[in-house]
Length: 186
Length: 57
Image 1 (spheres, helix red, strand yellow):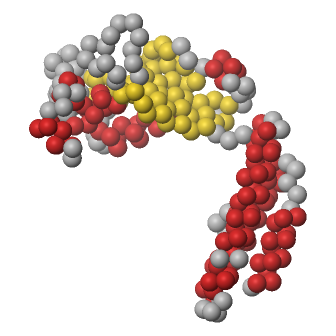
Image 2 (cartoon, helix red, strand yellow):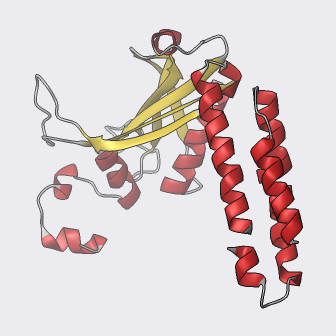
Image 3 (spheres, helix red, strand yellow):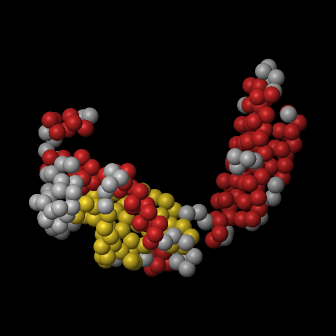
């Protein structure tokens, strides 16, 4: 009886949410929180190493989302992925669908920021591009940019693997060498 | 407890949700962790063991 009661309440709640959302009541809209992993092929010039590189795109939309939220999310991700002592650098950049946009660098895993051949003596390695979703993108999707805002970022999965496991050549990931693959439980 | 469940079920069915305020009120009253349904699940431990499967179903 109790589970049945809970199911009745949940079903009524879902039905009401959908009904209110379809009538265009903007306050009933929910935030969008998406992460899309996948592979993409390059058109035009061929990528020097990877024919079909792995990528991951994320987008988050809600009311009052700011660049500070984006930075906090990326810091949190980087600390979990690369360790708590990692340093990040945000460089202003341009992407067509975000404004403002930035590229994110982490300290080089090999030299720790001193400069080496992997980071081309800069001490930094780029890991992703990011930015606040452009208001025109929201307008074209029927979302009011005065009320809603969001951030998006995307990164190459393979490059992130290199950084995490301190691999110095991306080609090792695609050679199907069992000595390499077995180190990852293959 | 059975009567409480039945009356609550009737109350939920008859609850009119016409706006987002009503929706939020419904959610807060019934489905949240401190709502009426969760409270009934808490009372389940005091139900007679013979009746428990029927009440929990």
